[in-house]
Image (cartoon, rainbow, N blue to C red; front, side, top):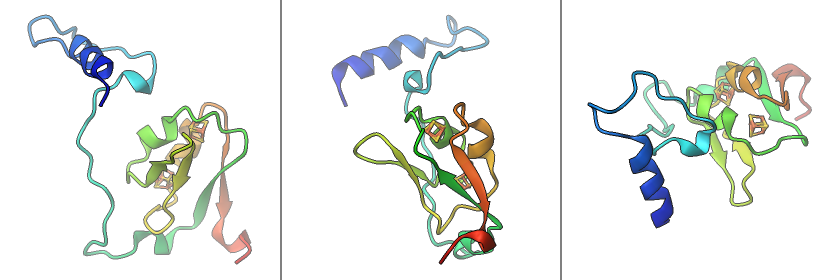
Length: 116
Ligand code: SF4
Ligand code: SF4
């Protein structure tokens, strides 16, 4: 972790007394790291099995990371080139990523219409 990043997070996360009631961020990169649970093979198995619609990231993606931030399942991963990919083994097809994508570059396509 770069030192400059650590200092930036300290500045944003002020102590309880001085922290504003509403903390505003201008972009996701200002967020401090938060613990998340990564999807694993759980008691209910491969949860992508029963997905009706599949989110497809299209070419116009600007790598902003909003979809990654909003996915409730934590199944969108950042690749080395800064782009994002979806783990379809666990994606439930809820469509939140498509709804939140500011550039409308996630298409929800019916599974039955996807060529195998
Ligand atoms: S459809 Fe839902 S579960 Fe799948 S990647 Fe988008 S937000 Fe995550
Ligand atoms: S929210 Fe849309 S533009 Fe941003 S990284 Fe995801 S797919 Fe790309």
